[in-house]
Length: 407
Ligand code: NAD
Image (cartoon, rainbow, N blue to C red; front, side, top):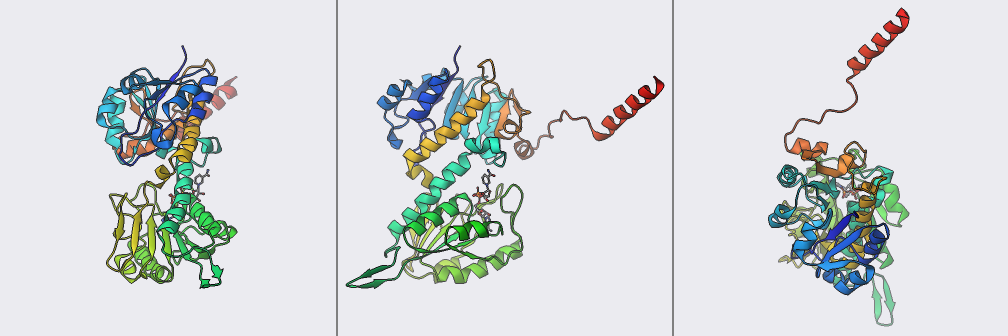
C-alpha cells in the first residue's frame, strides 16, 4: 500500500504559505506516494488546485485530507479541532511550536500521533540541512525585510547623482547577523545602501565583511552559545549592549533586527529611548516581533506602528509568508526531504527515534515524548539510553578479562 501524504490549508489569518507545492507533489508521486491537497490550500501562494491536479494530486476536502493521510504536512501548529481529528499512527509534520506549546505535543502523544516539529531539528548535522526549515524561511524573511524597509523608507536606498542634485545613500544597520540578517545585508547592499552589521557571535564578523558591510564589534565578550547560536546575555551585558547600540541606531536610517536566542524570548536591543531619539523617517523592521516582545521596544507582531516622532516600527515576524510562493517552494523541499528519510527499505514509513536527526526532530512517536528538550519542558525524566553506564561496561570488561584469564 502506498504512503499517502496530505497538505492542509493553513488556519492562521496571516499565513499565506502551503506545506507542499506542485513540484514536490510530482516528486512524491514519482517516489510511489499518493498526495492529497486540501481544496484551496495553495491559493495564497499562487498554486491553484488545477496545478496540483496536473502534478498528479487529488484535491480533497479537509476531512479527507486529515483522515486518509499517513503524513499530514502543515506550516503552523493546527487548531485543537484539527489536532483532535488526527488518529493513532498518523504523522504530523510542520513548525509545530513544540517548545512554546509542549502540552499540545503531549496531547498528540496521548493519541499515539507522531509529531515532527521543524524547530527541533538538529541543524548542524549535515544530513539535516535539506530539512532545515528555519534556515530556508529565515533566508526568505531576511530578503523580504530589506525590501519592506526600502519600500517604507521615504528616501532612496542607493546614492543618486542627478541633474537636480545628489541624494545620499541610506544607512542600514542589521542587528543579529545569522541566516536572516546576512540575507537582509546582501539584499540591502544590492539596493545600494551603506550597510553595517552587529552580532554578539564573533564568528559572524567575517561573514558580514564578506558581503561588503562593516561589522560593528560588540563589547559583549564572546556571546556565542552552543550549536552556532548566541547565548542569553546577562542583565548587565544587555544594559551595556543597549547603551552601545543607542549611538549606532541614531546614526542610521533603517534598522533591521533579527536577534533570537533559542529557548528564550527575543533580546531587547532597541530601547524606548533609542526609538525616541531616532531621526524622523527612521524605519525599524523587527523580525523577532512576538507576543512576548521583540528586539525593538514597541514592536507588535503583524503590525506597523508609527510613533509620535515619525518613526515607523514594522512587526516583521511573518515576512517569509509574504513571499509565499518562494517560501512554500523551499518549505516543500524541506518536507520532502524529511518524508524521504522516513521511508524504510521496504517502502514503509518508519521513524527511528535513535537516529541522530529523528531523535531531535521527533517531538513524539509511539505515544512517547522523544526530544530531550521537550521532555525537559514537560518535566519528564530523560529517556534511558542504550549505552550501558560506564561502570557497567567496566564490570563486563573485567568479567571478560577474568574469564579469558581462566581459560
Ligand atoms: P537565530 O535566528 O537564533 O539568531 C539570529 C542572530 O541573532 C544570530 O546570529 C545570533 O547570534 C544573533 N543574536 C542573538 N542574540 C543577540 C544579541 N543579544 N545581540 C546581537 N545578536 C544577537 O540564528 P540563526 O540565524 O538561525 O543561526 C545562527 C547561527 O547558526 C549562524 O551562524 C548560522 O550560520 C548557524 N547555522 C548553522 C547551520 C548548519 O551548520 N547547518 C544551520 C543553521 C544555522
